[in-house]
Image (cartoon, rainbow, N blue to C red; front, side, top):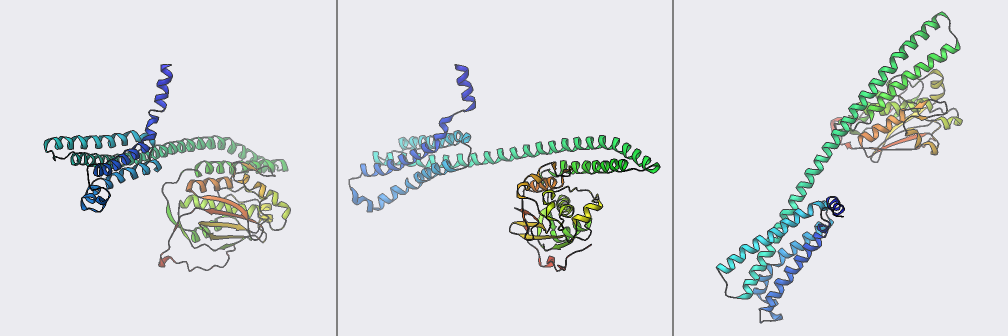
Length: 414
């Protein structure tokens, strides 16, 4: 039985400290009423004494400090200070009240006023001043400790995340290396065999190996894209978007770049974000057939692998991708066949598999990059009936007059 009580005490050191704010308020009200009552008890003037200067001076010696104690108790009860710090605050409050009261009691006995009422008033003044001072000191110390504990918790969390990311990077790199070695051997053997005699079976094998190489690259990028970003740079979206569009094979697709904002971001990962969104639009944004909407999900990568010829042929006909600004962020929209509402959340998952059997990682990478920046992403339908990706909670940087964007808004066509 004793062991059980000890464990409970370890888990909950002192639940009575949770009542400290109410106790502090009670002490404040007691001292306030004591000061008022003491004056009227030892005064023969009755109610008319309220209009005297003596009453005002007596109340000024007690009321402000008692009010500070009462307000401090209410504030503590509604503050974010950890209740574990209440004991420390209580010690400061009680210590200040008792210590200053005892000091003044010694002074009262040393230099008595000759009036019991004045001696009691003096003692009440000492108690209320000591209690208010101790409460203030306790709250300041508790807040300082809370900030230090929170800073240490965040530091340990960052270190744990960095360590986890390093292990994940190392694991992904080792796996990718071990996969690439036999894959390169197999690819080389297939190519040698195709030089002697080609067939549809060998062509299918070569295509599958190319897909495996792409998936390895995407997996590596996915493992690294979710790292928490601590250092950001000022990035001009207009220039970065143009560069990303030029880096993606888009055939006859058209880019309407309407962004002029400057944001705080990791430029490399932001570039991966736009390239994957553009590649997703190109590969699955066909406007020629709405029947492909169920398959209008991503297979994007962060490498520069070229989509297959048939993909580009059906995915870029009359395709228009618009990048614009919105409240709290930016969006990327296309006029393709769109993503069905039931699949909009699923396409952001790692390894979401489309109807052609290929595991998709491009939009999962986008999701990781968005989360690493502390942003939010939402998939909706564009005005043209295609897909619209909305990135919000983005920190924008005011542009200087020298940086005002004067470039043409003419759509970019490769």
